[in-house]
Image 1 (cartoon, rainbow, N blue to C red):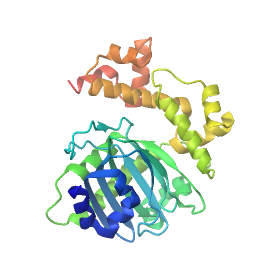
Image 2: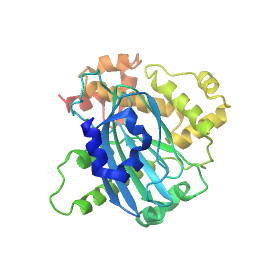
Image 3: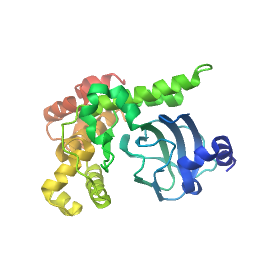
Length: 314
């Protein structure tokens, strides 16, 4: 508990603004915050969830007309906890959510899991000065009347940059300059990824729309070795197929089946890289009967044939 008290003392009101009343539900391994107000702020940390709860993101952080970029499960933290509970790392694929600072998002946290997290908040007009002529491709971000939410799967460049920020030693000089540049580097790689999305009209989303589409996403994630039928997903969403597909693509940047295949190949890559399974074992585990088909799909989504990818981690 002393660790939590020390963190509150160190960051004071800034910390309380970040965590709010949720502090009673978490144990903090570490947290760091860097403010470059009024344009930019960044904080990151690692938490142990003591009690399952739904986190409501803060709507006031000193940045007017700001955009939040919340990165989850994006680095490993081997810190020791203060007790001997059976703490599990979150099994969710690393992802980033983008939404207006002024509109709180609900993010479920599960008891006895370890959450790692990095957030960047940036003033919309300040971001525009960097995007310049490319800002028109992301116009929905700058429409203050738009209740937008988008989610992106992490790229290797994003993951590498996050780990640079979190794990490298703080520079002895020009620390603020360093972290401001790293925050913008992180956003650069994110916008590189977002720029590959197909252009679409971003409709205003209700809380129920968002909840329904995340139910669909969770159902897809729970069964990566076998696709769900559109009929089953439509029933789960409680909306017609056209609306479901439009909102899903708006939030996740790809269609339902493409998203399923992408996550499927991300999991295949993890099994090759971390579990050291053979290509055939992974292919069959992910539901492929034809290994040539598995190889083609893997190369499309990961950029390399599975055998070559696997050999890089031997």
